[in-house]
Image (tube, rainbow, N blue to C red; front, side, top):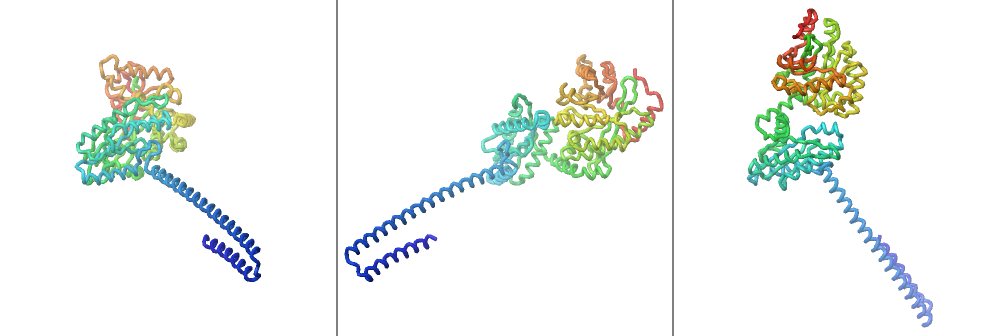
Length: 522
């Protein structure tokens, strides 16, 4: 385009020169006129040249401005690329590396261990009870806690170690060139101490702790293997009481496979009738009268045998399987309770435990109503038991769900009272009918100490002031039974009174109990 322009300008100048020469030759002008004409033509040529130079300068300035704008645009694009790359590799809340970047650094550390003499340590750190913080104080407080914990963990690791947030309340530390395993243990202990220090989020003091799983390896192990080993060790720390560090041991690998197998077996086990219910009676402590049953879910796995509820219930909660399992428990228990109404003449209660995931499910009340309608069990004879910490889950929604449950006519109990985080405020906030006293408060009643029953007595007075009934759980001895009676308790359950029964044995107990007068306790 520029070449064409210059070609046009040169052609114009040539025409002017040729016209001048033609004029001189063709018309034989005299010298004065020729001088004047030449001067005019020269002036015109000079003006034309000046004009061209000016235009050239303008075009050069435009090109410089365009080049500057292009440089600025490239700089902005690079900034955006760097920001996107950073966001893709870092956690937005804490700014720590995420799982993707951690995997890369862990692989790099393992490759480096071939040349170095040290091993690679992986520490998985999971906050204890973090869900209760979110549920009671809100997600903003939970995010604030995570940010503080992230900074504290970073402050106690070695320079060059990687601290990453894996999601939720889990952090992972990668330590390269670990010659002495005690170095990694020392870091783990510093993490425990740092997290234990009081944390204030706004006006709310939060007592936090963390469970740490630790493993070491070299290039002979993959990054995935090290992470799974550290994760298994972390779960072992949880099972040992939390707020501690556990190093991976080879038998824990079996636990990893077992957890995976159990999770994968849920649906098939429910459809295959591997889950079943047992029923533990609760009775009058005054005259031994049978008052009702609590439905307890059990799992007999075809490969692993009997699985304890404290093992499979948390897994069911994690996976969401608790929703269909809970629905089945509710339906089965209601059918059993309805079947025992005739020999009992009515009045026996059936207690069923409900989880946080169930209460949060928008279809729970519909499932409850369907179970009552299908079984024919009167709503007043059904007791739904919820733990204290469960009541703190999204309190407004929980209250509305419980009010809908109450509208159906069912009763609501707080299970394991005294072991959670509730307060008088929570007891007043929710439509609770009954408090079940946890076994940990009943056990000390075997002791001769006069203070052994102080807490149990205080809980009973609290329930009476709030117009709530009480049931003492975990009664194992005659001494405990007599102490509860002296303190004023009238209802209880436990292996001393009667162990959990299968459905046939429970039905036989109902028939036997109501065919003859119950024994009177002295």
